[in-house]
Length: 138
Image 1 (cartoon, rainbow, N blue to C red):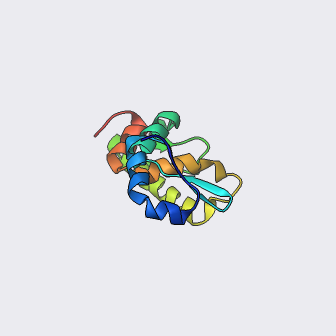
Image 2 (tube, rainbow, N blue to C red):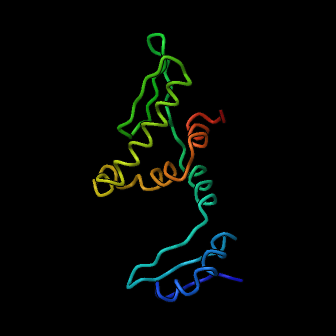
């Protein structure tokens, strides 16, 4: 099986198994609807790729007996009494940001380009986000 392309969602719906099988194998799988085209991609492949090309750039700073973490360019900063607590708070803050982005920030000029980050956050579990943030699994 090579790349799979369907020129309508009706055609894609009737060949859904082939479309999903192609995506799962890492093959190109697309569906056209009117003038737009969407790609169907295996979640874990996409998450792995986004983690590789989107460095967290998290800045971790010991402050006043605790820890602070922020990501330059994002409106996210957290504090924790311990390093682990600060990382847990950052995971929660990233999830809140992704929800806000989906709800109302996706069209804001200063947030629009964070699409990949939001996908990464949404497709990752807490341990995967922690590893992305600080480079180690819990």
